[in-house]
Image (cartoon, rainbow, N blue to C red; front, top):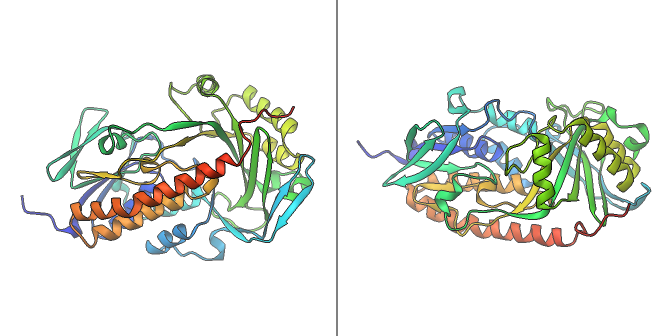
Length: 383
């Protein structure tokens, strides 16, 4: 079999969320044959919420031809901090743009051919075999590629091929509850406080923030946008496991999707919100009929590549959402990998990728841990 040139690599991307799409679209547009394998059978539309815009997100969007202008996101003109009564304690005139995960996902997904994005493709193992990487699927089938990019999130299967001696995440003891509600669903008094601003509240046992993002189809007009709220709460590992069982998730699950939470648990969450949060935030929680949860973990790998396998995004390093840099880090990983593969053969490209991106992953993870340490989340909440 003749040697394959750098411009025609056969590449598998494991994981079809944003990080995987960033890499897949960049590599596809560079001329490589790219196939994304996503374990979900129904796709990932409507699975995300809001994103704080970082420079890397604009860069990767422009790199694949997505037109980025003022209509791409929603700008908050100031940051405010609320006290328990809902009074504004502080203001900071720091304009900031927020994006919609859903819109970004759909934009990138549309730039891959249909056959290049395979749903229901659960990968169980990856290994390097000479100058190829081999993927094993749940149905027993195998496939060979010149390169495998692991973008399969914090519960990455691919990570085991890169760092078999150190692939486990560490649960940090708290979760985020999230909601994404039409702005017109907010009561007028809450809307006057929250909309057009990036709002925060912090107290023992609770940290809350919220901001506007575009509507489900990218709308940025007043009245068509959505309010994205994020509520950090302490939860023991045992209580997290019990909650996953109550939701009907399998053992070891660490998140829920919108609509999975039983009504009784959703009502309990609303009651807790009114006891613990400022009224505008409590009313935002109540306006969300389908809140969802994500447990928070730490993980930094000893390496990001091995053989013919590379890790990007949360598969490579899990950073706490306080940094607002998870998607930006994945974009940086994808752009660096694509650039290096355009300049070097696979071994040299992966060596350069590891040397470049691993220190960045460590720095962002350290930053997130410092931010988390400054929030009194693990202290008892005041009832």
